[in-house]
Image (cartoon, one colour):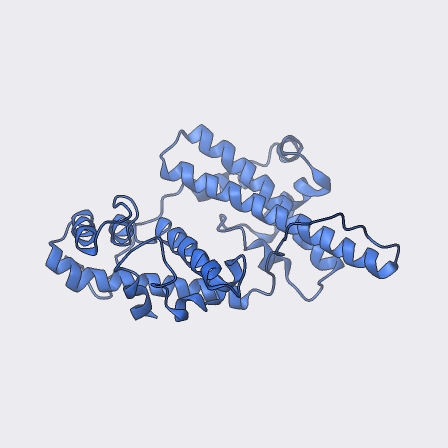
Length: 288
């Protein structure tokens, strides 16, 4: 796995079918994201997109620019040789090139390989995957039959569930992006409130879906899919869900929670609290 990721360095991103090792293309997370899982080109595109996402969210803030440069993402540019990219990555990391190549680069590759495996594990453990859509060449009416009605209703609720999950994901990403940009706190808090509303709507949809169609599934497993949120008590999560139920708009959601200062502070401060910097990819001690 580590060797397969390392071989991608020669050309960097974008990943090409010639450079993509089968061990990477066969990862569950890559197959699940591919438009056509049976097509190697489609899985290669999914691998490229997944790597870009992992590098964009590389957990070690000190070495994130170096990791991105190494694979040909900004501050590097596509088409640069590995030597040029390595020089730039070493500069970004604040290391001499030889030290970087021998000591740091292997750890970065190992970390990316681990992230790909963790991503695949999340897909393996998840029993719910968003439905794959295909263009409709013609109208597909629902037949006047109880079984057809049941199937259509299930798909209807499933689509509403995933729509809510992705909407929550979008707002949670927006909050993190604004924090990263050091945006005005008013803008961050406004977006955080929108994220709370979207998350609560998704939780309500998850509870409704599992109750009606999948009683063996836990709603909390579904609502973990949009991404990280501040730690909430069960009572706080239920209060948010109650405020968002019944198709409540953002304004109605906010009005319903008027005066819930403690809950609001828990949500907002959870995002505004700065995480401590990570220790870097070296397993023991400093990389310096």
